[in-house]
Image (cartoon, rainbow, N blue to C red; front, top):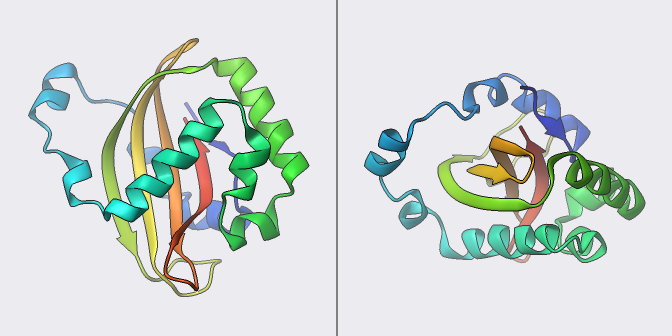
Length: 154
């Protein structure tokens, strides 16, 4: 099941090798034995990602676009974002369940300026897709806050 790309075009290329490896393949026993990933994530980054996902879940695509980081807004217009997300949610349905599964912190990634990037991978259940994964990519902004710069679905 391929990821649906709804974000930075340059970032897509840099993540192309990583994304296929993060498909939802764990069992309920694996999930129960997994450590609490959220405990090791920067609290401000986690709050930013989850607040942003709440906007997406509420179908408030205009507000979710405004809440993205500079890199996202430079690459994806508000209209492109709205149209993409409207189609995806029509196909997949609403999120029924979401759990943080993994995190990866990077400082250098191809196609984007050097900086601090955090990739948060969620295991998700949608109305019409029982097994899914979402990847939210955040970047440290110039003011020190976190901004969402990428969103990928599987």
